[in-house]
Image (cartoon, rainbow, N blue to C red; front, side, top):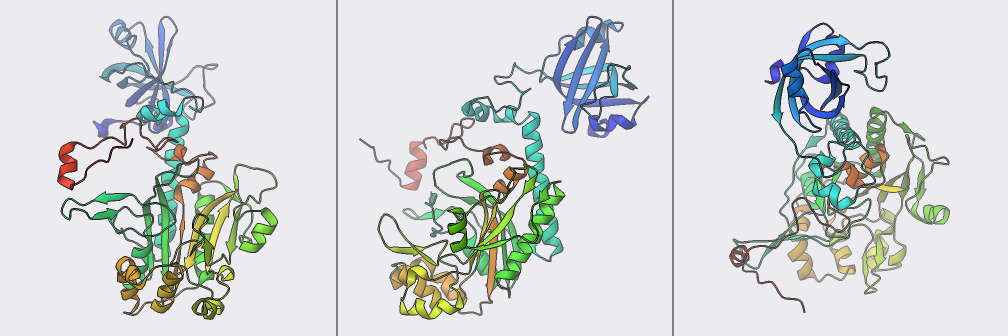
Length: 465
């Protein structure tokens, strides 16, 4: 079937030829003795003409309704003057039908598909997401995501990085959000955790000697959703050995320019300006900001924020905790104070963020590769030696087998595509996101587990009053 098919975008070069198109009925227009169908496939739309002089074909075409799936054969011809459509690349041509096969009928869609969808209730859009994705804006967004991802891989592959997958079933780790836990049937009472990031694995890959790693990584965090945050997100995870902060930032900057310009957008300032965390807070009142003086949607304004605090205070407990993650290395000149536990709130990390158009787009840092420094950081955070060993002993032990200096960064792919697509929420560039209430109305999840499943896992649900 596929080998005999022509895509709508290719009819420009088929005038006078017989072709077969396959796709969905996008629009139906009845002009009496002439019936017009706009057929939609993954490459665009094309006008199909059915004439009443072929009574049987015309009668069959007259049954067609929007979103029916059809196969139509005919001759490509030029549209008459005055009937051309300048808004589409196929607007000068039409298919004069000679054969029609109805592949699938469709019920009337419960949501309109001929608008951008912004006025439709989120619950309905996501309940019928497979229909919502048919609309032009959503199709364009998902294709843009594919293009951006392809450009990322193209750039990093050319820079001698290798793509390595890391596990989704792992160990709970402090990354700044609550973990999703996965109960183990084989080891009752024990749990895996879904990764908030591949942080420890990518550091272990550096110790393994791969030197330049990347992954289009899935990250899962049990935190309240908002416009630029979902339970699941995708990050461009990058780690490098034998590098310093400037090396990583240079690679990330070059990659961002490659992707942005490859997607037909502009970068406001090259090289990206750099602000210390202290400067950013004084100048902008926040560590993420928008440098555009005019909000040009086709321009991306990048900037680096560096010299973040190494530690922070937990607002609820008042205890010292990490500012970004517990694996960020202190600045070399602050190591002595770290071991003396002096002036902890003013120690700086070799940590850097990339901001763009008011969003935090990436976070990265030089990693701790000295087991003594790593143990000290955990100690200051309040972990006992036993807790450190139980939770991070594998990583600290790995440091003792020859750990190279290493550093990395992890730009958020969803946020990058959101900015490129001129959207205001990442759900608009994710194929199957959750609602603002963290639900999937299409799959009706989260949903209860059966008693049999719970019994297999040794889990009993505690009833809330």
